[in-house]
Length: 242
Image 1 (cartoon, helix red, strand yellow):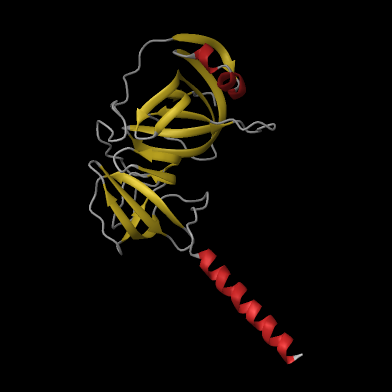
Image 2 (image 1 turned 180 degrees about the horizontal axis):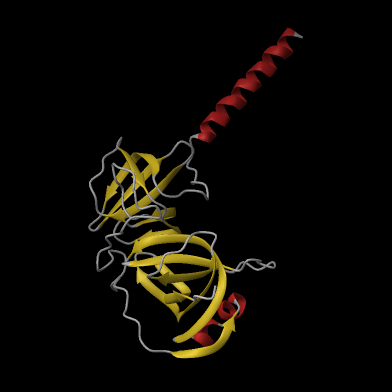
């Protein structure tokens, strides 16, 4: 009986040790990561125009990238919400990040901007040959009536370079990215489909707003630095009757 107790005790401590080691592996921040996220810098890689940093919060460890800035291992910094990129390949570093968040900046002080701070992005990306400047809006044929998000996304090539109107719920809103605000729009009811439309705008909105937007549709849009969209609405304006 005593021998059995010793064996069970040994198994328990072995299991406990394995569990502790597993908890030190990389995790990802929860979906509520927003403005003023406080983290500690655990690793820094400086690129030509970008700073890549592995950071740790109270609950997670993950990679972020921003326009080049001076940070050091051990620094306590803040960052606002960023754009999540999966399987992001940095040609300069010759490295693929499973998940990385492009954030406006890493700062020693908490942002007071609420939704986000201005992202000082370089005109050219170290990861792409093309530039990152937002193109000026051009005149486009307007599509009569309001489309559903499903109709737009599933038939996106038919609406390329056209002005369309759609409605949906704002699920993410980031300010000051390439001198634009980026948001994600989803239908209030997904009905089994995972529909998500990226939108750029100069107007301010809040996560949770249900809005009607009109803007020009672009397909296979590549801004560089990992900002690629199969379909995106550009320079959207909110309809006042919503």
